Image: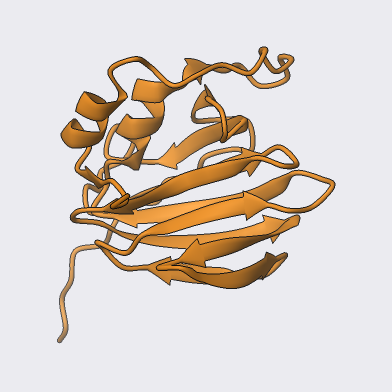
Length: 163
């Protein structure tokens, strides 16, 4: 007889999770949903990100993480290692570690995406650069990244683009 240990189930509601407004150019917000901080799972973390029209996620790569992104509303494009890919509702992409990528909201509405990162850590990045958000509150005035962004990137093991 095959015996196994049954895993736990974690359910996070639509307005639950640690949430942060994001700095320019990623105006909008993120909400961390399932992370090692609120679940028994320590091999990944997941959440949502909502980008305002015209905003973007800066070019970056993750030194040790693979990232899965699912677009569940809106339209835009991803630039991955200099190549553009259309993103629209239902698009999914996996970005391997060390791969430079950025995402643009090219639409007139919010671009909404779910992210899963293996291993976890993206939730720590968003906490370090964002401002706490409560569901339903109005967006703050656009704000800049922290002055110590280079040390935060190093701590979070981001790979900056080569200029």
